Amino acid sequence: MSEEFFAAYDELSARWGPDAEHLDIPTPYGVTRVNCLGAKEAPPLLLLPGGRDSSATWFANAARWARTHRVLAADLIGDTGRSVPAPGHEIRSVADLGRWLDALLDGLGVERTALAGHSYGGWIALHYALLSPSRTNRLVLLDPTGCFAGYRPGYLLRALPMLLAPSPARVRSFLRWESRGAPLDPGWLRLQEASAGFETVRPVTGPRPSAAALRALDTPVRILFAGGGRAHDAGRTAKAAAALLPHAEIDVLPGVGHHGLPHRAAAEINALVGEFVDRPALDAARPE
Image (cartoon, rainbow, N blue to C red; front, side, top):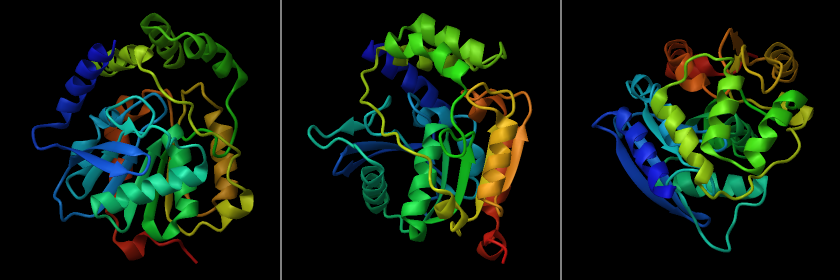
């Protein structure tokens, strides 16, 4: 199954285009695969995928953002992708995630970066922005989970068979249910199905960031919620986020599912995120 997974991974990664680079960055927690696109001297934009996803998932977004940024998309350590965990050095806490990202940025030669994450990657990105505000100059959250509201019980119930005994058929069935039958990219779907046979470690989870910590966050924030997603109630979660991050720019994208969000609404997401990260530093600063 791993051969099938890596074949699908490489096929989707190839859609980043011939100018993409693939780096393997050593960290204390293992070697992190980073797919890169854009001029090396351009300001960096680090992308974190959702759980059981990989850097290849940004195939429909990377080229647009690479016009003005050095796009750096990481495979999460211990999850699907080409990152290789270090035995005996598992990531077990939010603090470990922070140290991993510190080491990754150091290895990439990046002092400060714009940071974007989808789903669980958004949860990681938000925690890192709170832990290391000196290293994040902008924060983009794409339908983040576990940050401002919990999962819908029905979503978790529907996902349970796939999580307990993953198979390509169960992955396909769940994603088609979650996307409400909307077409998903065939190459991306093939990679998700192949990930059913990929051995992963238990992800770090924990409580949501505190209200006090969120209200004290000075980093400019852009949040896009999947209006058609089933993971959580997008409207209610957007209101909760607005109350906790009053200076954040928040939109709900109608008709877009949670898992397919980066590529299903690529044109709109590319424009909204691109406009936000392209702003001059003074324009991006949080209003007084």
